[in-house]
Length: 409
Image 1 (cartoon, helix red, strand yellow):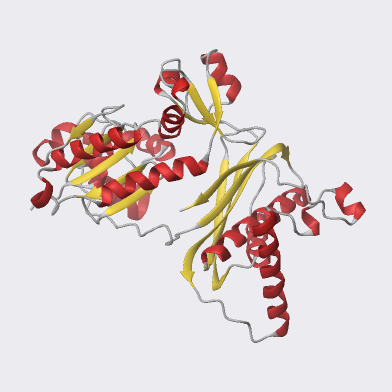
Image 2 (cartoon, one colour):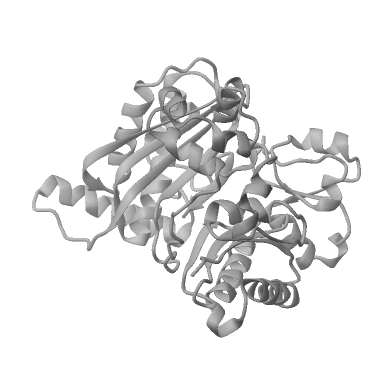
């Protein structure tokens, strides 16, 4: 039996949710941004996109392209609520729903066709329900595998439905640019272009041994991608309680370049990550940090896998510092991120050692105060600025600056 995979991609999701929540915004150019001082556009409505407004633009760039642009500060709770409703609809057709991001998912409806009809019928029903119940539109791709289904969903936007049938794969891929395939980023695309490979058809015919010589173990996989081959299964995403990683990132109010300043923000991020991990009852072995530099385009990311599971903020911070010290910072830092992954759910058991028990008790007390009265009502002294340190008082009004995104996947 040929597999039937759907990829559902919501159209201008954040902006569309805002337009649906506020009828005065419908039909108008809207851009959703973060709450930080130096935020960028995260999503633009299709009315704004017609003027050239794009994701990643600075607000001033968006307004230069579209003087009538309406700026909305994003509301993560609103988008998460809508996403959960959509995922709930998907699961009524198949238990095999793999949430790819907050606004897109893969569905394996191979065996659902016996109950609901063809894959196209299921796609039309889902599109109609999402429009009717939430007032939102989506684009759907249908194909024998995830790689092609995602490619198909990008072919007709907004509100499209594209089918790549098994007997049309070669014809469709012949002229598709390699950069349109999920998994081939700009850097890899440039390297393939240097070999004379620009289309998927060319990639699928390129000698495998030459690809292996150039790209190592991923060489054979690249050739398969050019041929539209993808055997990866749709992995059902568990409910909200199943957390895969916990991460926070922060766009800074100003570029920083001293180790002391960076460490202060790393500690703040480690506390945010640790507190969220403890709330979910998870510990992780892998800590990663992400840095975006002042030129906005240069990024660096590193991770370390530890010998034991951790969720205390100080432990996360120490791992993050090790990573920072292994990096070469070529220019001032614009954005910082810390993530804890490789998670395991663990019952909280008291430590056998008194010093460790004291740390755990202190951490629980800090969490309890901050959960009740708000973030960072109690915090580490080293996270305060020079003036606050001099007074030896932790101000109850202090708030972290420049929070750009909170990621719990």
